Image (cartoon, rainbow, N blue to C red; front, side, top):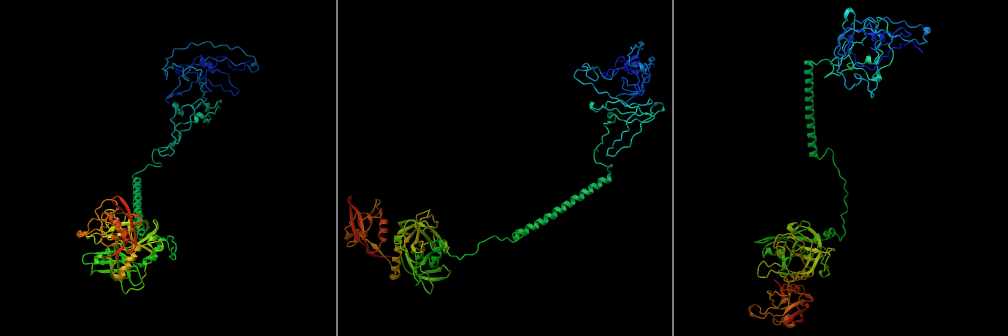
Length: 607
């Protein structure tokens, strides 16, 4: 049914910008402008998007570039037919088309945009893939002008709000406001509502969200320092303040360095800011187990002495130990030998007391000597053990004065027994050569330990330290100054006791002999009896122990008391390990045959 709306062609919302803005209005404009009024008496909006105007009242417009262009006069439209009465609106009436009017020739201007050959919206034709653009409905305006938003109130370069700028009056003496061009808002922000007419002479309220958008309205941040511009005084003040800060920092660093240096010096001199007390155990009673090294040393040290010998040609230092409370001290012969017949011997005890001593007796063949001190009381004699009871591996302690370091204690074990060694021989005539059937130990022994005691776990003397095997040579204890390499040798105390008793009693020691002269040039296995003695005499002493046992020149002795003999030196060592008068079982070889002989040892005076 007829609802009072025009039945002519409907307005198309898809269109590109008109290229004939300056042509006069034609019939199409009149048809669009002669719509039926709504209930409020205001005509609906036409295709141009402006409500409340007719085609003959074309408004001035502003170009997209912001230039103001007055609207050309429009041609008067034909009179519109009166609308049917309200009672007859229910029956539709056929619309009579308006007679076409002749369109005068109008010069068409160049379009602002080149034709889009792809018909891309909104300048091209409608595309099947893009939605329709939103319709922008500005608010209704009075006939005398177009409303604009309030003047822009932005900020200056320092963030301070700038005063609004008044718009220039429009042509004809009327006040006209020019609206700055801005891009349309997004589609979802455009309100779809009809404009509300405003009374004449009043500024319409901008209810449309797109008209309130101002891209330049956001507060701008200052390009440099906020606030008013900085002058020369401000710059000088800032530089002065910076200089003051730097000077203060330098003074603070200097003060901190001085304080730190003072604290460091105090800590270095005093060891800290506070007294440091480390935890420590209290003093004990000092007791040790008697069989420990400390217990053995405590028991044996009071009986050990250090000897300083000065002669006319040489001097030396050695060690000895007390034999009895009468002042007899046992030591090595090579320790007291530098004194000669008129040298000086000084004995220093473990407590630091010193006393002069004299030689009682000495023997180069055994490398033993006895000296005696007088006018000394409170002596501590060392107990003597039995060297025949010693076993390899038994712990031992050596006490002496190596390199004149008195009261030096070292410990080790018995490494071997019955080691045949020879020491001395510096004279070259054989009178100073000693033959020792020694105890071997790995307890460190060095030059100066000579004559000191080698004690067992019960602090009993089992040997007299006499020689070491040096790394650079095979010389005796004082033949060089090399240190210990763990090869030390001690005279068994059983032999030392016998020789010491003879030296104290008679001043001389006796040597056991068999009465033969040995061929020391023999390189075979065993000890060979020589062919002739010195002066052409027989190598076997007539009426001596060997002659009585049936030993002849050229015989080779291979065993003594069941122990193998490999050289003449070993035979001498094995014989001197016994006392004169002892019976010995011998095995010898004569003409390829092995014979067994038994003899009784004789005696000879030592030197």
